[in-house]
Structure formats: C-alpha cells, structure tokens
Image (cartoon, rainbow, N blue to C red; front, side, top):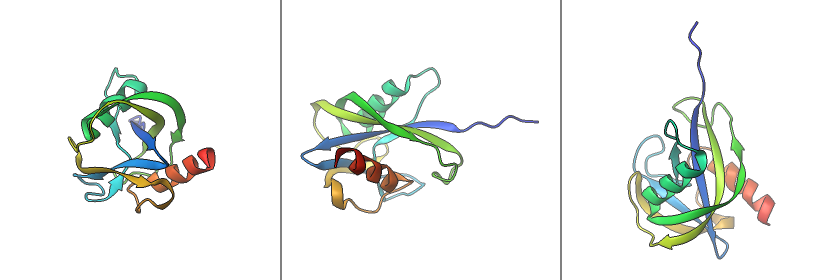
Length: 133
C-alpha cells in the first residue's frame, strides 16, 4: 500500500491601510484569478522562510512574519489534490511592488471588497476580517 500525504504550501497576508495585497495568477490552476501571494514549501525549508521567499518572488516586497493567521486544510481547497496551507500575517520591511515569478499583476485591494479569489482565499480573508474587524 502506497502512503499518501498532503502537500504543504504557505500564503502571505500583507495589509496596508485596510487594504490587502493580492497577485493575479500567471499559471493554472486559476490562471488570471486574484489570490494571496504564496506557494509550495521546499523540502528542508521552514514555513516561515517559505512565505517570505514566495511573497518576495511574486511581489518584490521583503516582509517579516507578524503572526500566524491559521492553517487551512480542506482536502478540496486545491484542484491539484490535498494541499494544506499555513497562512501568515506579514509586515512590509523593504522593496517596491512589482509582479514576478507566478504573478502577472500585483496590487492592493480594499479588504472588505476584494475580488472573487482563487482556491479558498475568500474564506481566509473572511477569517482575517473576523480577527481584525
């Protein structure tokens, strides 16, 4: 019997003046849809380092971890299979916004009226709104 386990990802939440930073996805799944910046954790990498790397690669921003927002593990949250995401609240420390890596665009949206998002990112934002008001 082959043992199966979920894949591990991270997502970064960057808030500024009641706005949230989102990327427009360059690749499938959800190509062309807006999403939180993030991606897969590399083998041997801490999730905290992975989220800082992914956010920098996709947005050009250097960030610091402020808090853990939560772990999102619904087996149906990603069409590629069972993917668990650790979601971090981040603070900008340096850099200028520019799309890169898996993003074709990046910009801030009003936290309470963001577009329909890829994966379960609307649920994540709802969770954030409950925590920060």
